[in-house]
Length: 206
Image (cartoon, rainbow, N blue to C red; front, side, top):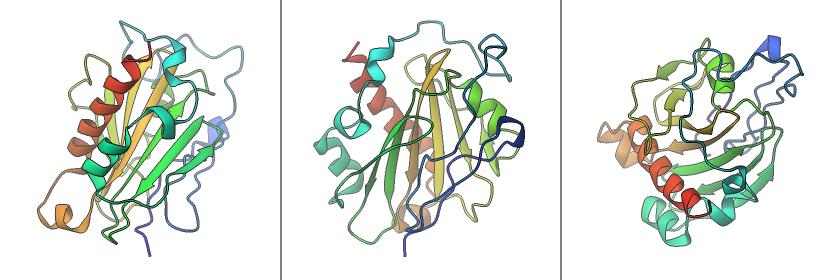
């Protein structure tokens, strides 16, 4: 069975719930309440400001089509099962899983529906994360944070969130394979590398 991993922590005040798929694949399927008109000015919750925002069109469509090329996915994971595209309450997502049985996988989500960008992660996840990594280097100058979700039993999986505008973000959830775990690799640092590749692809759409 695939390693079960949690993606977004629940925040009662936001009306969010934390869900994972029954197969153990990550699902960006939290249900945050859409931001009301009285939402504080962005950024908030301790999140950094995005100084050079990208246009919203870079996050148009499915991550399966634009986040990573087939060659890039193969370079990270080797042979994979068919990509699993979903449309969640946060925005569209795409899940690639290694077919080798190593438990390695990458899930990319475009957070386009909340209108809160990386601030949502700071408010919803930071207070409850098992591990909060705010010392990751920015990805190409864009604010970046990583975390290991509450309820996760090890550091095999890390979610890296990059703010591309004050109201837009994308996430890369990386689950590293067995050999990487045995070698003591850091899923958050490796996930940042994947996020950098994604951003290069996104900027080409600007």
